[in-house]
Image (cartoon, rainbow, N blue to C red; front, side, top):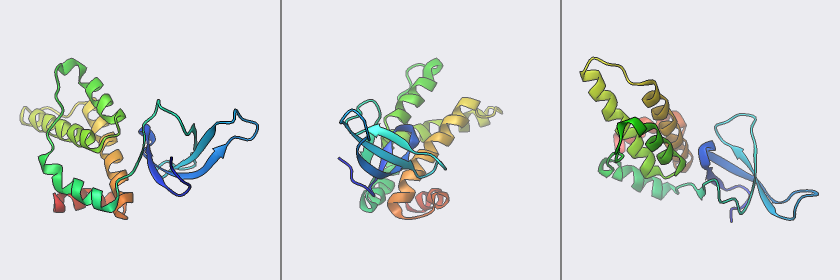
Length: 161
């Protein structure tokens, strides 16, 4: 169970701060988290503590983030079985909220885009969309873990990885 003040990953909302834990006034007796998404302004989320439909997990510690970054070079790409269903693979990886799967998504899209560019083509709209979402999710978590600005994370990874 998370405590007030904890930073967690909450599904596609990314990094959230736990603002409150407790039952709802006049509610069903269940415990709820009140979450404040760090990178979504003027937003809050109310979710049951026992919610199993959305991934909720601790963010990486600073040490875990540093180790993760040092191992990024060893992370491969997604196993794409059917090019026509690649969007499904991207969504599945992102919904897992697993940093390794997110890096695999970034690398897959990066290499696909490079290949398309050598053929004189642009990146697909879908690839661009998922690349942005994946980077946003990964950099958002690492920024909080490493106590830095989200915009600085990409260069930090390039320098350290």
